[in-house]
Length: 70
Image 1 (cartoon, rainbow, N blue to C red):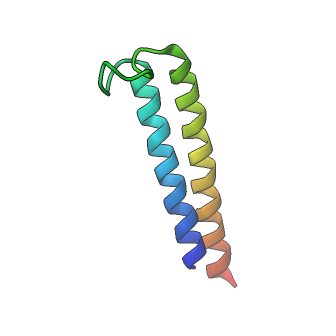
Image 2 (image 1 turned 135 degrees about the vertical axis):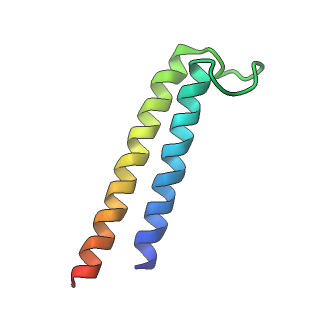
Image 3 (image 1 turned 180 degrees about the vertical axis):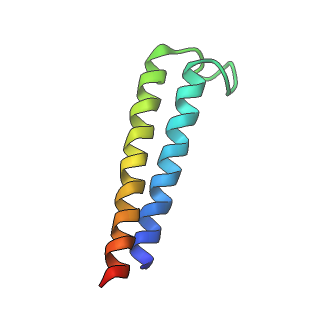
């Protein structure tokens, strides 16, 4: 049970970071002095990071469902 919560927490954090990075690449959030600000490369990078976070989050939820079944 504890391991699944850790995996879920890590997935949420990575998902949030990916969203923030993508928004910085779109010049929506962040300081204008950031190297990510208004950088199209970080839109793509942020989306991939968010997808990885979502996959980790789903894996953590799956682990918790499997553990509660048995």
